Each structure stands twice: as structure tokens, then as C-alpha cells.
Image (cartoon, rainbow, N blue to C red; front, side, top):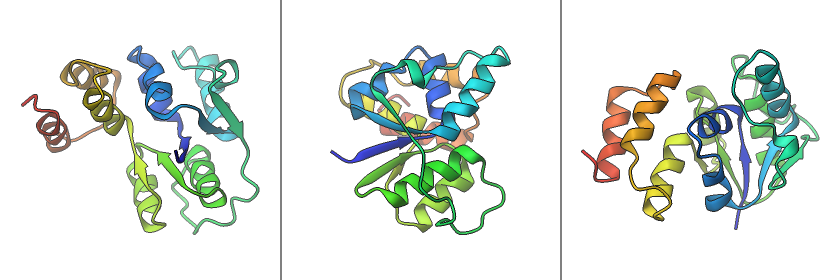
Length: 161
């Protein structure tokens, strides 16, 4: 199985949906960059309900050797930058990103990728969840940004339209 490197928002949203374990069920062990651990720590300190990767045994925290391997994209956060850097350093890696720009950079680097919605689609396909639609509605109330077209496409893929 490919290594999985995960960014902050999929961890946050799956945790807030009460579905963080889907990551382990779908991916096994995942790699979390130190910048993502830091972002989540800041969130917890601010009172946001986010997971603590340091206390989850199936999350492997790693620091990239070099972030200079990435093209200069000034609008990427530290978490996205480290996810992409680790993906370039490791072989056979899939990245989990929700940020549009980070996904575009991953695609330009030919990195396999998915996001929170892709994980929910996979989870339904494997029978780990019964429906995606309630989670889409919950994500919307949590402030997850996805266009109506994307939401419709997801529901079509999982036969819930």
C-alpha cells in the first residue's frame, strides 16, 4: 500500500464528524507532517475541536528534509508545503489535501491525491458508512468549502442524488 501523507483540514473535519477512524480503516498508518501537528495544536489551544496526532498510534509524525524542493507557491500554508515536500521525498505516496491551490500543485507534480470528500466516497464504497449526504450537510455547517457542483457530483458518485 502507498504511504499516505495527510494535511490539517481532512484530520480536522473527519474528527469533527466523529469519523477520524475512517482514515485508519481506509489507509492504515498515515504520515502527518510536523507543521500539521503544529497547526492542530494551535487550533486546540484556541478552543477548536481538532485531534492530537501525537496521541494517536496510527499516525506517524515526520519532518521533511527540505521544503526547497517545491516550486515557489507563496499562498500555500506550512502544512500544505510539508505535505507536498514529504510526498516528493518518499516513494509511492498519496496526499490527502482539501485546499484547492495545494491540490493543483499536487496535480502539477503528478502526485496521487484525495481529500475529505474522496475519503467519504471511499468509505461508502467499502461499506464503512451507510450514506455520505448527512456528512456533506454536517461539513457544510462546519464551514467546509465545496461548491454546489462538487456536492452534487459527490452525491451522484455515491448514488444519493
